Image (cartoon, rainbow, N blue to C red; front, side, top):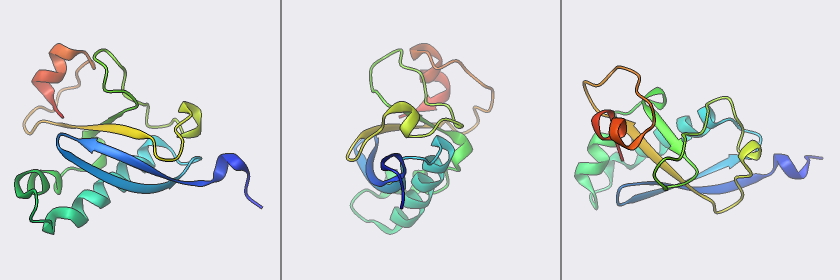
Length: 121
């Protein structure tokens, strides 16, 4: 019997004008969620409703993503080793995904100024 904290949930992952739904367990890490998002983006690359977003998203590996629990300016990205349960992410929660811009490989702080330079939402 699985515990209540190990249940399967559906999470909305938003990026720009696209929303991807991923099914994950609350005990999975943020790194696992990034992999699920990467897989979902790869599967959606054939979606003709948003060709430019899908084409650029399909090549983004999990290590070039950041996931936020809030879209508020100044919020910190969720750490890879944390679980969804650690951050009280529940069924039907919204997570926000940003990608590292091509050619910007240096590590930047997650401030609004550096996000403009290095990360795209």
